[in-house]
Image 1 (cartoon, rainbow, N blue to C red):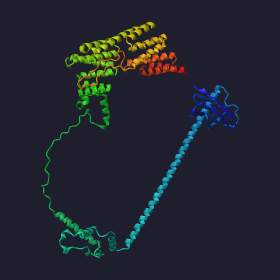
Image 2 (image 1 turned 120 degrees about the vertical axis):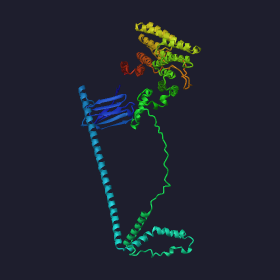
Image 3 (image 1 turned 60 degrees about the vertical axis):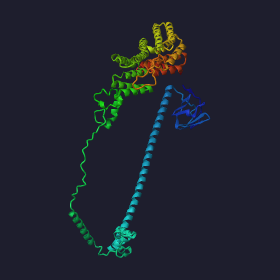
Image 4 (image 1 turned 90 degrees about the vertical axis):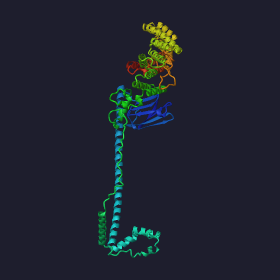
Length: 606
């Protein structure tokens, strides 16, 4: 909620000056709004909202902050004295002036945007025009350079043609030899002679030819030797001689070098087995992988798939169970459930995988699924006796898990019966179960007292209900249901402080993660997970279960209501927000009720 700020003002014929002390507000937090007849200055927690008696030009106004004082100078639209700063009129007139000022400011801002957009477009056109002119100038320069080079090359060609027309053919050939030197064949022969002579004349010193015997005059050709007809005749003779030699050559009849035929060899090509019976295509690879991921438990039973293409991760139950054990020990219970499920589908006799899956369900708070798997495993054992060498211990572990699941579901008589069966199956190891059986008996008794107290509370007998809830808490101090319901009794009786304490105690108990089904760190692929029967808190639902979430939500709601009665509105809002985060998304009625309470508490804070 804002506090009205203070100011002082003065005026001249051209402008109005205001001095506003900021009272410790930083420059970053100051927000100024100026319209035709409106001036708003916000510097939290203060707000100054003025409806001016005359019109000002917001574009020509300015502000200066110095030594904690904001000085504003507003330019008057029409020169003259106002004599008073604020407009004095009815509420309707003030509202009309405000609307007109806001409308005028919006139109001016829109016009500024249009002008800026138009100016920006004009600048872009000018820039484009300048770039086009620059490109045109560069193109003209390049064309001019090309034309000059072309003219220079043409002049050189015409000059060369004129020089050739003035010379005879002999002079042309002589110039060619002088510029290029003797032919390469003659150069090679000359180098051979200079290096040591021709090997065909080696040892005949009297026939050695020296390069000095060749006179440069002999290399010159006369006009008769340069006649083109003589060259043409020599070429015809050479070509006719070559064709005659080719025509008289006998055909080749030697077949001694022809290779023998290759031996026949059979090559067997084995293709990688494919799960899908359709051709492999790159365009469908992603869809096929998504199908395998979503339907991994049903790949073996799908008649449209090629079961021979299943790899070890879908076909070998021993490998799958070992993989599930690794997931279980690392705490990844969801992945362990998937591995155990695939192993059991690959081999329906893999009861150890079914039992271990029940342990995983127990760890994540899905007690109903755990109960179903354990009962299914017991049915298989009853139909196939003596399959396991130590079947009694195996059945005992299943009954322990059944009892733990029923405890989590609130069925304490059924849980006690399951633990007693487990104790009867393993008499030598019964000491480990005695503590759990005693705990269940205490919880069962506390549950009976709580139910009696619930009946009294529903009948309106609050003090008798408080007495029974107290006995339930005394029987089992770690029983959160009794504490939560007793807090409701305290709230109804007006003892809000005791309600807060009971809710806090219940949430402290629920904040500890109950160890529903422990395990040892060592196991093998062929063994069932070794399980300890220790139960941390029989009366506390497992983490993540819907029952535990509802208990925590009820504790937050009741403690929030008690704090509101004590005047701790902020603490009450915090608890109600925590409760709102735990509401089931499908329970929109409860969520809406909590939101209304939070809104009402916020109104009380203001």
